[in-house]
Structures are given as C-alpha cells and as structure tokens.
Image (spheres, rainbow, N blue to C red):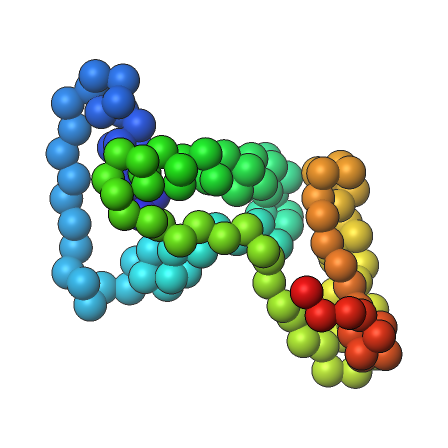
Length: 126
C-alpha cells in the first residue's frame, strides 16, 4: 500500500514507475496492518518517525478523496482511532502516560480520549 501510494504520487508528477509485488501470502506491512495507518504505537522512541507517521495520517483523508474521485473506488478511509483495553490499574496508568507523551510530542492537534471503566459507562453513545 505504501509503495503503491508512492508510485502513484511519482506518476502524478510525471515520473515513469513500475511496481513489483510479492505473493499475496507474504507477510507484508500492508497485509500485517490491514491497510491501517497507525500512529499510536509506532516510533515512540524515534520522534522523527513518529512525526512522519502522524503527518501521513493527516494527509490521508485528502488522498482518499482523490482516489475515490479518480477511480470510483471508495478506499473506506476512516480516521476514528483505536481501542486499547487495559488489564488492571497499573496497565491503565502506564498506557495513559504513554498517550500523554504522544500528545506532548505532537502538540494540541493529537486528539485522544482515555476512559476508565466508570467513565466509559457514563459516556453517551455516538
């Protein structure tokens, strides 16, 4: 998916490209991530990589619109996030701190909700 996206961008700029693909059964990033763009568990110890992943996630909605318009195929892009389940208070506290650190690294634009069980039960459904 990443290679095809890069090839698409280069071709849009007039560069002649070719794509070599492995077998469908090979474990690749696209297959392993199911097309998911993840920023919440990538690059925690590499700030430049984390920021690149975050910036990519912000560019995808426009790219998805372009793909839909040009191909008639809806890539079903959805930027709703993830759910992590914590087992116990210590794991919940550790995860809460990690997400807070992500927010500090990116800034105010990093949207997230952290709910413990009681807060989740009080939250109105969407």
